Structures are given as structure tokens and as C-alpha cells.
Length: 81
Image (cartoon, rainbow, N blue to C red; front, side, top):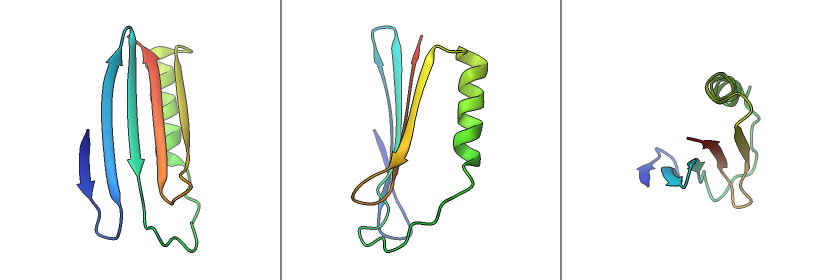
């Protein structure tokens, strides 16, 4: 796992692991612990990620993304090798 400190409160973590014939990628941004208002983005990064996964793996992948209860965001990708 790779961890980077953010300019504001929070931490960005990225990890990758193989499990048999599957690759699991995870990116998590813990964000601030005092998130009063979360601004919705345009989803361009997630859209680009889905398009690239579809291009390379067709229907052989799963992508989940969403806000974390304690603040921040998490995205996970799983696909066959």
C-alpha cells in the first residue's frame, strides 16, 4: 500500500494485489474528518476509468466507487488476469 499525506486533513492510499486470477486495485481518500459539505464532482475520472476497464477487459471487471461514512471517497476495481 502506498500512502500520501494531503495538503488538508486526510490521507490518500493506493494498493494492488493479486488473488488467484484476479487483480484488486483500491484507491481511498480519507478526506477531512470534519466534512461539513461534500461537493459533487463531474465524475470525469471515474468515467475515464470505467471506459478504460471496458476497453481492456470488456465485461470481465467490476468497479465500485462511493463516499466513505467518515468522510472521503473510495474506488475499487476487480478484474481477471
